Length: 159
Ligand SMILES: CC(C)(COP(=O)(O)OP(=O)(O)OC[C@H]1O[C@@H](n2cnc3c(N)ncnc32)[C@H](O)[C@@H]1OP(=O)(O)O)[C@@H](O)C(=O)NCCC(=O)NCCS
Image (cartoon, rainbow, N blue to C red; front, side):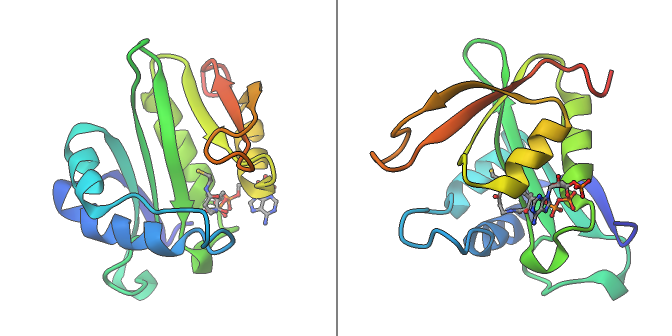
């Protein structure tokens, strides 16, 4: 993880984050549609977007792809919704996901919500490790066969 640092993304980071979004979900190519470049451009300026950058040139990946990223934004009910966290496949298991979550939760002054595929063990374990719990299991959240956990965090683990 010392090879990478977590920073607030700048608008010009949107292409490298969108590039990561296109390769971060290899297990569901038939059902998962990455978010488009246009919405990453908007999020990078108007939402909370965190990016994992190489700390030095020696740690760089392909220059057009971020090592990790996270996006969250306020909901109409005044909570924060953590829409997406992703780490480059070649960088996983090294603490980048944990560092992105720590940085995000420190910035969240309210309840944080997210949804996750119940079969996505790495993500569910990551979230549970920070104190997220399952508020609701939503059957057919997307297509009929695509269930999700709606998980919630009250802001206690980093207090
Ligand atoms: C989920 C994800 C962001 C984790 O990022 P990461 O940098 O590999 O995570 P870390 O190295 O910080 O590990 C954090 C915790 O995640 C869990 N975890 C990570 N990899 C795991 C694996 N292969 N199996 C089970 N748990 C795993 C563990 O609880 C781990 O903590 P521990 O090492 O103390 O046991 C990454 O696997 C990823 O990008 N997955 C694809 C995109 C995705 O599914 N995003 C989440 C849904 S929006």
